[in-house]
Length: 130
Image 1 (cartoon, one colour):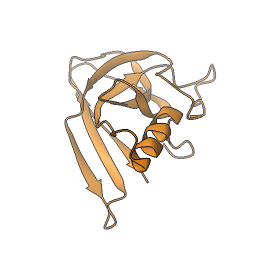
Image 2 (image 1 turned 90 degrees about the horizontal axis):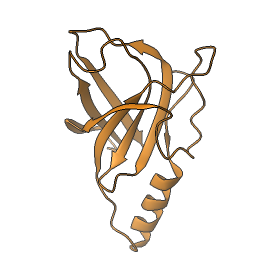
Image 3 (image 1 turned 135 degrees about the vertical axis):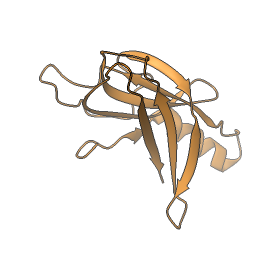
């Protein structure tokens, strides 16, 4: 995602703010979604604004397989999910997002199109950086 980093959405930031104040519990990130609507007509990644409430064109949404804390300070959490061999064959993935247990998009990113070949799984990581 060089040049176009993902963002924590406004909804995600609001939930963090309210949780830090003690007014609301913070729901866990539980799902990753992929779509093909993350590029413009020239094939360049659309800017991630933070105002997204869903992917531009979501193709699949799956449970997070694992997460891990990255770095000594543990201020980055890496979420991982896999598109299995038969899933989304022939599609060109250009956006992904993280959804929380409430079903809200809390992180979003766009990137250059990644072709999904048949019979080859693709593992995706998305970092939430604080």
